[in-house]
Length: 420
Image (tube, rainbow, N blue to C red; front, side, top):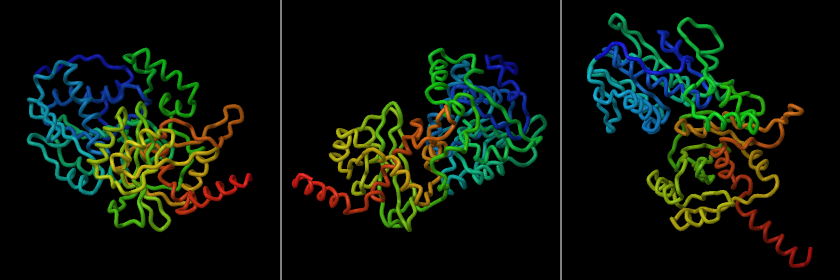
């Protein structure tokens, strides 16, 4: 196998290619090419250096198939290396003819973390870890991963963990651990879509447009800046390994925000002792209602549990009802969004770590800022807020306690009959 292989790459990533630091934190905007380049360089590394093995990690194991596996397998095929690699989907794995391998794992729960601890390779040791969407994982997750890279290695080999991510919040532990303090073992790297010389013109123009229509979101997803803490809508939440058993809670509700081009989000909420617990999520893009119902069936959603939905889509609500689910519309009126947010602020919110999209959204859900005054308005930014809409809908029983809506409606009807 050739030792020197030339492949086009963005110059911005040259320091990463040359790095032998144990930790490489690759912060970048959307469209910067960081994941594309990372996958390509891992394929080259594993083909050139016998004895190396890679573990690709996402918080939710199932998301590897459409992200890390797709990127790595795409890099193999684009480069003409397919004859040198074998791919399997059960288990998800890539194996090079030189004996080096790539495995894929998640960190959703204790079972998966224990599974990671027992990883072994037929040839060589685990030397490399790629954590894609690294802001999804917790610091304890990272410590479990880091602890796997230990022991002596043959001459020329070294251990390395690469993290690729968008910089969602200044309060994130990754910023504190890897960016705020100098460490000779850490290489930090930043890239934006403007550094990507292979980006298509339409995507570039789309990102430039965001600079005008969503200036706050553009700072994170366009310029790769850490998201501001100021203006955050919710801070009364935490990630926690909470029970997902129905009997553990006083009641359950579902919240559903309909979508197609943007995500259709369904959250399962458990209510107990005044706390709101986000137990499970369905978060799908470009799925029809029929497909979403099939997903809900496979995931075992409870048909008898009230499912509060966006009232703007009565046809979809009807389809969910016909499928046996207790779907119903949320009543909207001027100020209803603020009222839902007020309810959320009055309760402690615990989020299961498997709900990665909920965590991603809640950490950057912000109020819109008046560009003239610099003050935040009582108006949420309508961007990447699908899970947050589902969360708002799911607390409808807390906003309108059982029995009161009907009583109020009856009173209004009676007054109208008397011309009042």
